[in-house]
Image 1 (cartoon, helix red, strand yellow):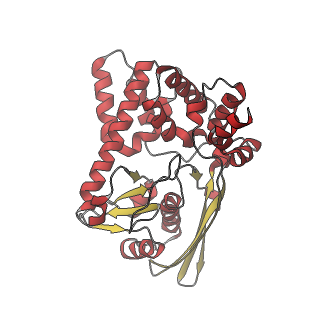
Image 2 (cartoon, rainbow, N blue to C red):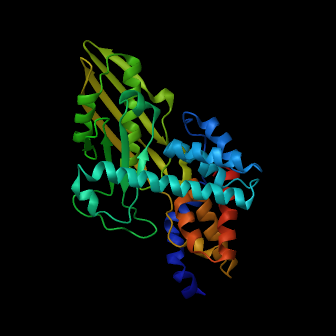
Image 3 (cartoon, helix red, strand yellow):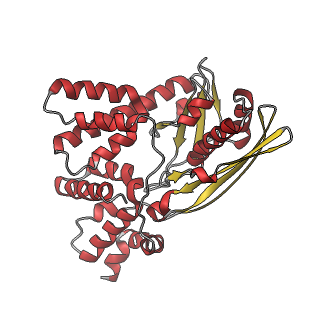
Length: 340
């Protein structure tokens, strides 16, 4: 029995999981995305009995791209939807992710040749209303070499997390390093009042969230954390991206202080204190384990990871036999229904 339990992926990363179980995550609402209600309605229409309605909704969601993904992912776990409805949602999510990756490679590969050598690691779009306001027409992309459930090698010159921006004229920049991101803000953002300073702070934090993230943190930026103070000719802004209600056993925050003078970003002071909860190793494959203790541990660990486990569960679902696929669907439905 002992040998068997030790083989279950080192007791499902026992230490990390135990810490996660001690404080189960109750995911609170994140900041609303622009058009969220509209996207939710379109996701609903994907299950319409009218083929024309389904087709029109799919086209609109596909055109919305990455902005529609939160509504689609929520719909994927809706227990009230039929299997056919959820299958249509899953296919659309895959189409959008593939389209984002393809477009990113087309735009960035011409300017940053090393990107052409990266295979099997998809780009994702960094979406934010504040980035849109501050940098009209610019598109931000992320590239993450995930370390869970299997660690990916990070080739030179990349880091585990990377961020890039494509401007309307087609020029592209790597803004992974804080200095490069600061230079981009200095060159492209004019911040001359308190409102714009708050927008810039949220925009900076939005990129920082992805650069500090292993893919399993969810953040929110509390409005009360955003402060702007005028000191002579300078505007000093500060804000925090906080791990959302300790989702997935994670905790901590990213804090930034930005100083502006004559409309330009003069100085940046960023600090982060993040603590990881449990991470996926082999839990999905143990949902139907003959040992009830192992099954319970696997379920609880996945629930503790919450919505951050979505990509991992979908990867496992694609290669799972039918019964295990049903078990994965059931636990994802529970995560969404109970808002883990």
